[in-house]
Amino acid sequence: MGREWLGLVLMVAVSLMTAGCISEQQKFYYSIDDSIDEANTESSSDILFTITLDEKGGSDMDFSDLEVSVTQDGTTHACSTTSSDGDCQVVQTGGEDNSSWEIGETLNINENGVDICSQSCIITFTLSGPEGAKIVGPTILNTT
Image (cartoon, rainbow, N blue to C red):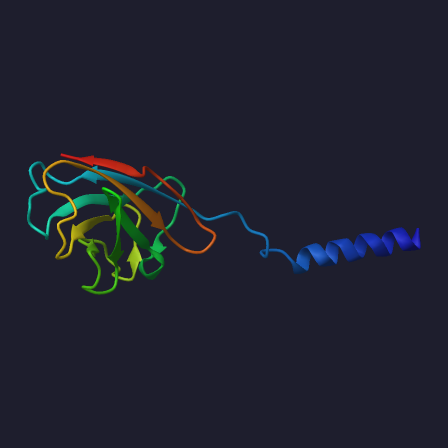
């Protein structure tokens, strides 16, 4: 019984030392909304769409972890979250913490000097966050 007891004690010790090392994948859920009617023009500063971090069991996301790219008609545009660089920008319009995308907070995805969508177009976009996180939501938007 001595060896069996020692084996059990070692298994318990190892499981206690690794507690927290193996965690469930963090999930973020979002919803999108087309920009207001007739907002897509031949201008290069239109709001393409808005995106809201939903509450479905998720948590706030560090804004520096957020990456958005927009593809329209075969051309992909990286959207900047930190500066005025990039063909498009991710703009926080509310929230209490500028360093986080907070649950319930809506972000604008704006053109930034490049006419990505004039009038009616289909936009595909990708959204990624912290390493190892799962981002759940739609990927195609028909802006009219």
